[in-house]
Length: 242
Image (cartoon, rainbow, N blue to C red; front, side):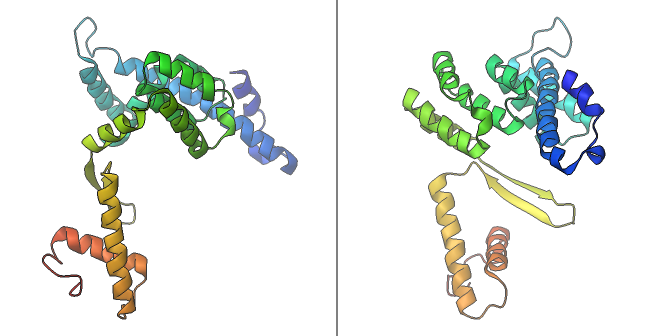
């Protein structure tokens, strides 16, 4: 709160050039503090029955919270669920929650740590945080995720396989309209080997089309192939026919 009051007196427009990076770092710490407060509210919503005194299962309470948050903040159901689940995961790890509130972690780093702990025993989660929490804010989220993975596997060799199997179990295809009217289609949590093979096939056929004289760039050709194979336009065609 004290930092927020101080920052309110120092808007960016009034800062000297040599103060801007320091001001940015301070605002980013404050953003982490505020993120923790938002997530604390969401976590409470996710762990309370809609009607006080009634009995609801944890998944049902999360589902109800998602609908409430979606309506209150005007989010999509997917965005609301992501926020509620992140809030619940971070709030369930008091050390991560405290580091976020103190501005020692940003949003993405807190998510990396909380999601890793969710797949570990309580003892292994404690040891993981003993190993990686200090100094986590000085790493990029990618660097932190790589370190977390090494430590988690050393603590629990089955950790990575469990995470992979659970992700693949929830695989799905999503599609949505972009702001410019175009559309995005995405496959999520796909088996890695099949996804790699699918991408390699798109690359190979697009490269062959390019060599055969196609005027479009390789990215456009890959997109045309991707869509044509999905919507049936290219159904039954050999690679040469494609």
